[in-house]
Image (tube, rainbow, N blue to C red; front, top):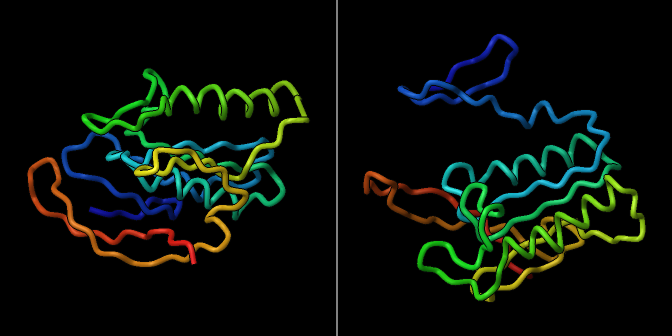
Length: 171
């Protein structure tokens, strides 16, 4: 069910769940620090969360560094293993290790230690199928177009769910 909180924030709760997460996006105003939002393409808990956070920071905080990383991970899958597989699917690359060494560490070196000679892209995106990281100077990438595609999948109770997917297609 949905309810309207006293402060005007809409919330989504599921019956039987003890806590209800408030959306963070409206509260990401006046951020002064650099932001690196990290998410996983296979995050069954909240795939859109990282993308919504990135968009909100970008819109509400012009002028700060706002980076996005989307890897082939489940929720939090960029820490704790090397990221070379997701279940039986092999990526032929240690994606989480690459993230920690080539993305996260340089970000911290630049913004925590002041190493100003490091050039960071707007987005790092792992492209499954090709099994490679792409550096993008803008997100969405320049020359990409949004398109709708209907998809279906099974949820944990094996019920079919339909949902719209927005894909990036090079023009």
